[in-house]
Length: 283
Image 1 (cartoon, rainbow, N blue to C red):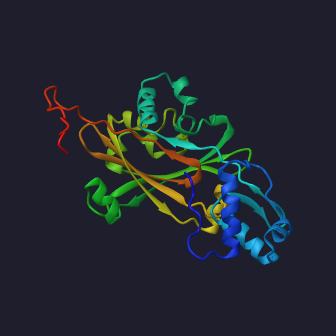
Image 2 (image 1 turned 90 degrees about the horizontal axis):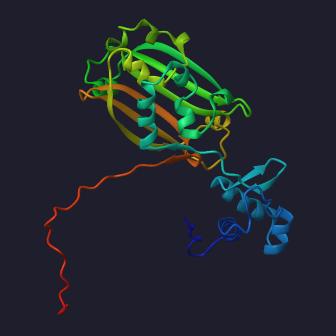
Image 3 (image 1 turned 90 degrees about the vertical axis):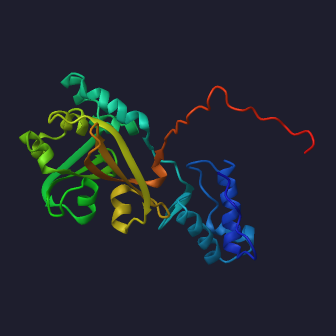
């Protein structure tokens, strides 16, 4: 998407930022290329070093460049993206009925980010918590009813940065029939959560998702390896079974610059005999 230049009477540091931004968007400056140095910008724009640094700070705050603290500024290399689509959840459902060995090596993260499981470190923590007002309303249960809380984190072995983070809640009464589902030592579960639900007779019929943007903390930026100016997306997924019950709520977090959310809306066809448009020649 083409960015707009700053409108109105524009301070010099925004003029510089607009010029550099245009060069990045036109790929005159490509990913990984160095930007002009502060001294070069100072000479080119006849400005002070402080103004030149402020211009680079604008682009750094937009997440377009990286560097600083003694490191030269460069055009940011786009990170690998997680792609959330309507297809991979069906692929997960199909995987439920596949052999165990196939389920062991085909996880959700491979389906979304294309990252082999062996390149990741995973951690998982189970606990039992009382349902908050929010979650009780989602599950249509009494506040305070016992939920199984499961927190999942995957990190890239090469960088140590977080790749995925999610917290899910399931009413205890739905899964207590299989004690393995209450044991965090059984993770990672071959085939993921749809297979877990399958073991207690639950078949999912659809997912409903909502997305909001949140501002990351300094600690968030560290664990994700995020640049300044990039927000986090919080995705709430409601797993709804074929009996129309919400059986699991999952809140997952993703950096916005490495997340692509793809969805398709199917429209009902007009009837075969729908009236055709006729152009009024008098108009």
